[in-house]
Image 1 (cartoon, helix red, strand yellow):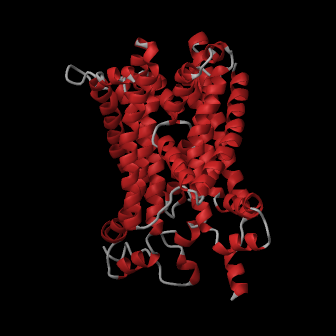
Image 2: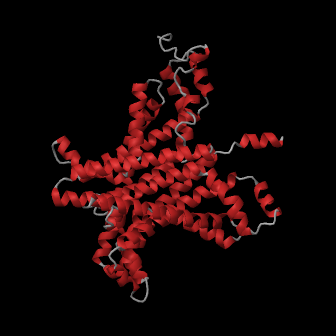
Image 3: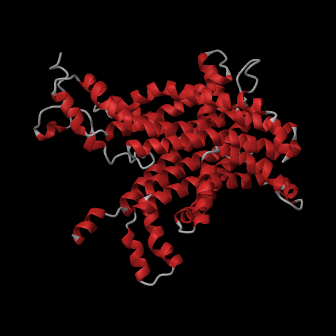
Amino acid sequence: MMITGVKITLLLFVVTTITSLFLGTIIAIMRISRIKILRISGTLYVEIFRNIPGLFWLLFFFFVFPELLPFGLGEKLNEYIYYPVVAGIMGLTVDNASYVSDILRSGRLTIPHGQRDAAISTGLSRVQQYLYVLLPQMYRATLPPLGTRMVHNFKNTSLCMAITAPELTWATQQIESLTFRGVEATAIATIFYVFLALLMFLMVIMLEKRLKIDISSITRSRA
Amino acid sequence: MKGLLEQFSNWDFYLYGSFTGGEPGGLLLNIILAVLSLSISFVFGVLLGYSRLSSRRYVRYPCIAYIEFVRSTPLIMIIFWSYFFLPYVVGKDIPIFWSAVISLCIYAAAYQAEIVRAGILAVPGGQLEAALATGMSRYQSMKHVVLPQAFKMMLPSFVSFFVSLFKDTSTTYIIGLIELTQTGVIISQREPDKMYAAYLSMAIGYFVICFSLSHLARRLEKRIGVFDLESYRPEATRDEFMLLPKRKRDGQVSLAPDSASK
């Protein structure tokens, strides 16, 4: 049961990391675009999802979302045995994406204007500008906060127990109620979380050291 | 739409639960939890954050261990520990409310320690040196010179931490505290056909408070200056700003005239 829990936790974490990075990037681009509607809707998204707890979104996607779907799709979803996991992924993604987009947007502000001008003058299209010039720099500039955010996201997967997704925290409670060995199970789970989160912190620090650009050297060479 | 309007007739449940007749609940309970645990853990946060900067290893390392441990544990785990196992340790039952407050305090103290630490580091080192040079003791110079400036810089991050703590109080839903999320879930289960309305009222409750507070934080940030906890890096500044005598190595004057001022 613990092993399944660990697997589901890791699955939730990996999938939500990828999806929330993707969604967050799109929203960050929306928020810095020149088109007003995109900008406003991006800002609206961030404000709404940042100011309401993640647990709410998990419950929302688990309980309410199937009801809102048309054509009896909701009942099918409710019968789907892995729906708690799917709802967990959706809830965590939308919650985390708002933070990611905020971080990325602040990263965009650190990139000098010249980068974009240079990208335009080499004849890159708008999509290419983002893909090859701006986005890599945005990720690199915001690596530490992004890493912290992802650790948060990893910890938030434990909230999925509220919607009965069979992940690690849920497994410990299940063990508690079946065998009254809750202390051991919770201790193991805590150690697992702490170990993995610290590992991630370390990885972020190492990655950051590796990817660091020495900005002062660039400006110095220009001067 | 009609369902939504009917939901608003339950507004007293969402706002303060059965406060007038007994225990507080709903949004009021969230606020109480957040304010109480923030203010209790503030003391510990300052202590931890300051002693993390100590030059004495036996002070620094336990603090680092505590902070990093709590920062990498999910809040739910802390809540479970204090809910299920603290009563064993203490030997008597602890009300749900207090176990929630205790776990939130444990959680918040670590994060506040990080804020305090970063705030102290953000005060230029010359301030402390100047204070010490005027003959203040270490305690006096912290109290009258460094900490006031540090707190001013910390204020925006305290407000935004309060927002996140406020959102985290919703986690106590899991141990059955009747706060806003629990209220919404109970009401939505009582009337399953108007589920979305209950959830919408819940969302509005959280949104109004968090939105206004996070805007306050942003405005404070603009006035006081940017100060970003999220971009904090553990070792970037440790050596440069270590508060206690580090410079002896260069043959300069020691920064610890504590004994001299006695």
